[in-house]
Image (cartoon, rainbow, N blue to C red; front, side, top):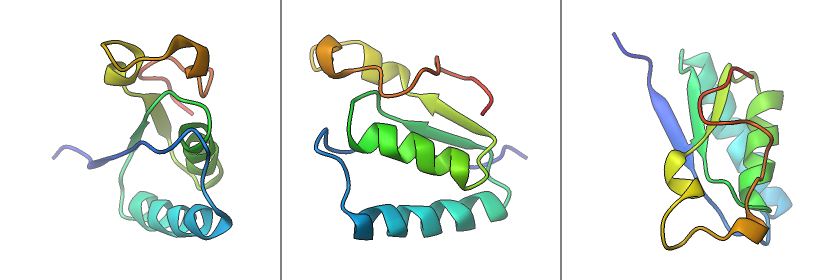
Length: 90
């Protein structure tokens, strides 16, 4: 059986406290159910916050999505939300 994965992307403006609290609860439940991988975008703001929340919530892997680092919508000056490369262990 393949462990479930979840993905996230958000605004470069970041999340409100209510949104961060909701994400903490969602990820705590997600990881408690045996999920292992949390994929997120690679922008400043909400993507960086989500990576930190995943680490703090007990996630085993948080990965930047490959799609976030290439293509016509990639914005190099606003990327690199976290220091991870796609696929690392937390």
